[in-house]
Amino acid sequence: MSNTENKIPYKIYLSENEIPKQWYNLRADMKNKPAPLLNPGTGKPLTAEEMSGIFCEELVAQELDDTTPYIDIPQEIRDFYKMYRPAPLVRAYCLEKALDTPAKIYYKFEGNNTSGSHKLNSAIAQAYYAKKQGLKGVTTETGAGQWGTALSMACAYLGLDLKVYMVKVSYEQKPFRREVMRTYGADVTPSPSTTTEVGRKILAEHPGTTGSLGCAISEAVEVATTNEGYRYVLGSVLNQVLLHQSVIGLETKAALDKYGVEPDMIIGCAGGGSNLGGLIAPFMGEKLRGEKDYRIIAVEPASCPSFTRGKFAYDFCDTGMICPLAKMYTLGSGFIPSANHAGGLRFHGMSSTLSQLYDDGLMEAVAVEQTEVFEAAEKFARIEGILPAPESSHAIKVAMDEALKCKETGEEKTIVFGLTGTGYFDMVAYEKFNDGKMTDYIPTDEELEESFKHLPKVPGQE
Ligand SMILES: *Cc1c(COP(=O)(O)O)cnc(C)c1O
Image (cartoon, rainbow, N blue to C red; front, side):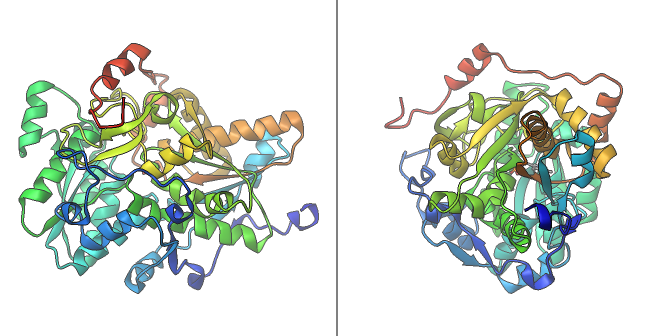
């Protein structure tokens, strides 16, 4: 590669017609398919009919489709994508130089839109299918606020009503996110709230709780299923979300292919797994088909370590235990990560698709601590100019670590990582870091064991 090396620009842009015309459904190439969602009442796989009470019809079809490798992206969605895509793939020349590493580092930057993250890729798709079905609106939860913001933009664009349940700690810490959502017309409620039955129950059991994604999901689902013309949409974890996010990986691959670059490792942060699932999709596809091999690394916070310390088991996706059961790496649906954790990687479980791939040894996972993540974020901001989201900074940290290992060994590895968003709305977290007041609470084994005791009893699961 060395003679083409200096021809690679800082930013590899694709043209508008190179925005993918189809999403890639990784499950089609998996030998061991992700386990189906189960009805918590019967313990049987959820049927399309049962699902369509909660989710939009077309999204149910996508959720259940384990066999179609490519699914057309409707023209209306591609038109919306054109407002902020293709996203640039950046060659991190400055970072390579600062780290004095022979590694070649690239990052796919998904923060170039008002919502500031990759979540818009799925938000517009989900809103589109809701609109197409003739619904009045959708409900959802949001943690750090990125998903709610993205969805509020998509709903405003299509003229859909949106009710957002926002994890209380974020509602209070991130007033600016809340106001962006309201500016785009969303109705935002801090969760747990007294507006739902499940919210009142959670408040009675845990007075003063700062909330969790799991609680907010329960509330949003309740509102969707008890209001006519509404369905629930989710910003991560589900197969359909990974499908929509495959635009990230497809564009990344197209950009690398232009210059004949093949990555050695692909790194991404993992909350519910959607950005990582999307980024790795076409690469993992090649790996599954036996065409290529890549190291794929999921990075998660040490305070919410689903992959590295969780159990691979059927569990509820929500705290209120009203949602379907998903087989995933989970810390238990009652696990509430420490409130002082700054990033938005606070979900107790992980995408079933990624969980299966991880269990099959097709990808790795590492957990990193918050303070070292912010050290990496600060360094990256100063060197590459972009103020990264705390979530994204988990991937930055591990990409830097891998690049430094290359420095020791002299290996010229090619590293690609996902820079999922910007950190403009995370200044409370940066303030804590800048003031030297950042802490990290890492759960003890005893705490996790206690949480695992509440995993639901499912036939075939010990
Ligand atoms: C939501 C979010 C994540 C984590 O979610 P995934 O579904 O795991 O991708 C990562 N980065 C940013 C900026 C986010 O907003």
